Length: 267
Image (tube, rainbow, N blue to C red; front, side, top):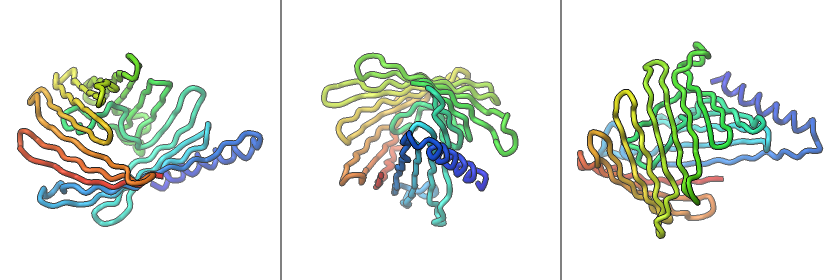
């Protein structure tokens, strides 16, 4: 943790020094963030509801460097660092390092599509293409790569976009493919979809999403159960930067509802 914070400080300090050296070029610092509280069923007891609060902070120096921190408040009310990253713009590419999530496709409910995990990673993005190397344990061996993930997004027509993704796990020697399609215009709404397939397991999962205004609805399933979950949510902007939301998911097999509500402030 100490080394991580020192590294972040070093990157921002270097960026500040570069700004001071070139007074003719203005490189303003940008600061954005979000505070979000979500109330949902607890994992230990479905009859009880708990609140989870997260804090996100992103800092950037225009044209030079950027970084981000995300904290979560645990059950003991202590603030813990959840995710972080530092990066720089290098020519036409951006390079970032940290615990920054995976490099994959997404949907809404995401109960049935594969979501391969990635620990600390090194990510390089050029245009609509990106590649990330996920490490097993950087504190033990920085050369021990656990998995590789790559994505590429292309415009198909008008606002329609297609994203392809691949994850290769070097330990298990397994490959997962993913694809998502977004921007399908239905007139009063837009539709999108996601699909994943394991080349070795032959397991697949899908999700379809329809959105209009602040309302979103989805359904999904997999090779075991073609129709497994339906759900939806509604987000309402109360004021500039303040948003509240409500979500519910229904599992057709268990016949159980999973509701949640949230409030977020962005700046």
